[in-house]
Structures are given as structure tokens and as C-alpha cells.
Image 1: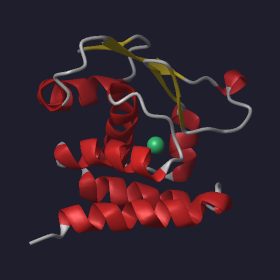
Image 2: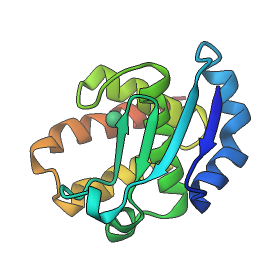
Image 3: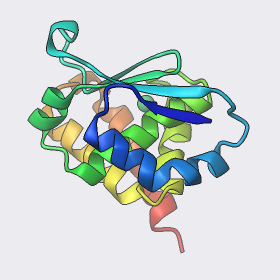
Length: 147
Ligand SMILES: [Zn+2]
């Protein structure tokens, strides 16, 4: 796995520094590159927080800021997106979402993933997805708080 911070985003540099080695171990089946790029305002008419095309992950600093995500919550969201890439899953299917969330959890970012999802729900950006988002929280709580 090769993590490439193409637009030199500070949060991506932090993500790679803190979690690059751990990701390599978690997803050692994945030998390709993952490229991180900025999602600029003019290319983001739907106001997405993050987007994925193939092995490229786009991050909108504006939208992430509007939602009020903390840096650890952004790191968890990046881990989730990496989870989709390394398991080649798409969004919105419950199994795919859980697989992606488990990567955040494996990196020690499960609690931060939960609070990020709570902010998505509170923002009412995706009201049609609330039940799926709640299911993701329950899945993560089962991992994080299991004895
Ligand atoms: Zn997802």
C-alpha cells in the first residue's frame, strides 16, 4: 500500500504519519496506491464531505469545516474511506459500511467515528440515510463497548 498526499493536505499528512504503518498491517492484501486529493468548491456542487473515485479519496475542507468535525473525527472518516478502497466496496450498503467502519475501529478511531456519524445525523444533510447511519453507530458501539 502506498498512501499519496497529492495536494499536501495537513490532515492527510497527519493521517499518514499516525496510521500509515497500522493500515499496512490491517490491509496487507492491498498492494496498490491510495491517492488523497482536495475536493474543491467548484467541483462539489452537492456539498459532499468526501468522495471516492477508484483508489482516489477526495476531501472537502469547506464541507468538513461546515459540519464542525474535529481533527480526530476527520481522521476516522478518512479511515472509513480507506476501508472502502482496500475492500473495494461502494457506499450505502450496510455490510460495506460496517467493513469500512471496522477499519476506523481497528485504528483506535471507533469512538471518533461514532461522534462523526452523530454530527452527520444532526446536520440533517442526509435525512434519507438516518436509519443506516444509526445502524452504523450501533455496529461500532457493539465493537467499542463489548466486554
Ligand atoms: Zn461509507
